[in-house]
Length: 547
Ligand SMILES: O=P(O)(O)OC[C@H]1O[C@](O)(CO)[C@@H](O)[C@@H]1O
Image 1 (tube, rainbow, N blue to C red):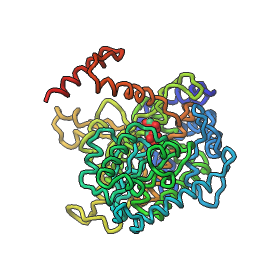
Image 2: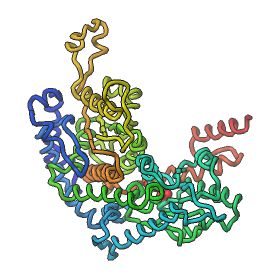
Image 3: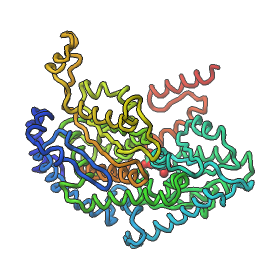
Image 4: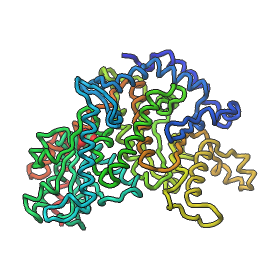
């Protein structure tokens, strides 16, 4: 298997990296007067501006050579055609098939999958229409007013993020999300609900996840206590790949919405896992959401490399993390509605690329897997931006902003003719500008700053960012943003040589938690194999019993 660091392109990038580290972003803009135009790449409705990244035309050229030498185009074709690129689980990786138009065809492992996908979408649409219209009645004949999605990880973060992002389009039942096995989560979600008007969507690819099954069991008890066992059929539906386990839990497979092992959990929001989103926004808008994803899939599959936004974004992520040593990336959407995007991207990117071995089991030879984190702007400006501007760590930022607020939603700002949406965007542009270009001591002194404060007010600059602008946050645009990040994650995985679609690293903790449950509940002297855990369990028991 190709070792990325052994390629000729990588070797050249290492040398180039040293050269570029001595050139400031200010200088790069002087040397390359057409930089802003050249490094702005449209993709669907997204306009992606890479101009404030620390790179030159030469860097991009070398990164594109790296993509060629590590086989990104070949891997992309393999993914899109359904080859088993998830080698450790021997599975195809086909989230892109979830958003193929109805008249497309794709045969995978001898099965035509597009027809299957649309059959499930149709069933989801029928269920959604019935819930939204009131045709789906609860056990006592009442209309459903609340849908509670019970799931975790990919079975929660995607739908929860999307429902919040599209909240101005939510005109169906209210939708809530319960994920954590912390009982506070379910208790709070159910506190003001009426079992007679509530439907639970139990969403789990495997239908074996401890948190989801615990919450679903508790929710079932809550419902049965109020309405009796026979009520389960009208109040529980499932989303899963495992019919037997759904049946064993007590949900009729007729009330199950299927997806397939070729959809990874963190890539599943376009599958039946999006049922709660469809309930909230309706099937037509959910169709627009899928069409948005498909538009970026098509861009990723067909745009020439130098104008392929997800390809460039993925390569620039590798450049930042593995060569320049910028190990984390802040994602700052200037949109309160996108408040859960950073959490969603944490799973998408870190569960995909947080790996130390390559697909063939050999050790990686460079740092992989950026640490993703963030909060919406402008809130983040009043929290962690100090470190972004003047800290010792350089953290590249992804800014996301929208030209328009939702229809009829913009408000006048405090003074002048400026609207709040303009104020929001002005902040976003200002932050990216200051991060890139800073302010040197001469400029600070020029403002009449007292000499003892000059060092404190110098803004170092040279802090890279990408700005993603779109006209408005609509279902389609949200789909485009998701697919844009999915594909850049894929590109990085290919360059690093890792399997971005397994997640073995989370298994051991799950197994040990299962083993520790009984120890916590019992009174025998703990003997878990390590003194620290034994001591913590003893302390826990003391605290638990001291009231
Ligand atoms: O949908 P499931 O099978 O309940 O899994 C939930 C999540 O658990 C994981 O397997 C591990 O955290 C994720 O990949 C997945 O999204």
